[in-house]
Image (tube, rainbow, N blue to C red; front, side, top):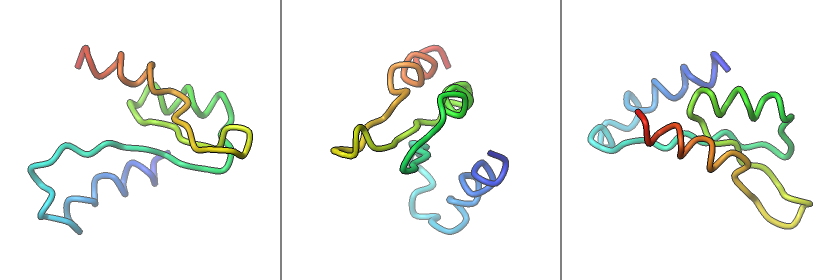
Length: 71
């Protein structure tokens, strides 16, 4: 998680043309453990993975959106 957060911080260094835009952080993988999804949700990061190998889906969309409403 620490490495992922560091990369998110460096994004603006590599792409200064997006400095006025709000980034949407999404962690993607072929599969993600439920405990890791919960950790990502607490950090306000979306978790995206395959659903039954048919399509990609954000597993914690409602949890992260609800959290962002109060920030």
